[in-house]
Length: 123
Image 1 (cartoon, rainbow, N blue to C red):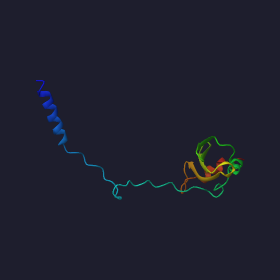
Image 2: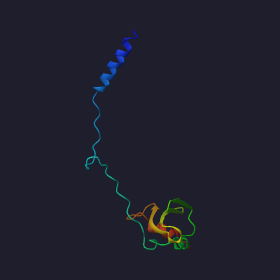
Image 3: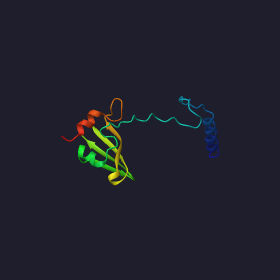
Image 4: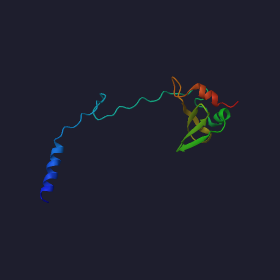
């Protein structure tokens, strides 16, 4: 009886190997060995915030609710009840400048919604 168990397990294992596999989902055509990248978000730097320095950003919006530093890059987040804005700063010290902006919710044709950015301005 004990000898029959390993033979039974081997027979079941071989039977499983011969079972048909489910078909793989169709994949969009691309070059062999590559994975298509998602579409990047549209640029969203309105002229009033594009390439401004940190002093001007603070003068316009005040202190950020949250700051995250990653090497020479910083992300400043500003919060309002209806929206959140993320300013990505590059450079160091007084040379830091806004290089990218995104809002939640995003704008209709850009990553930054102008109405959200206007709501963040200090009175």
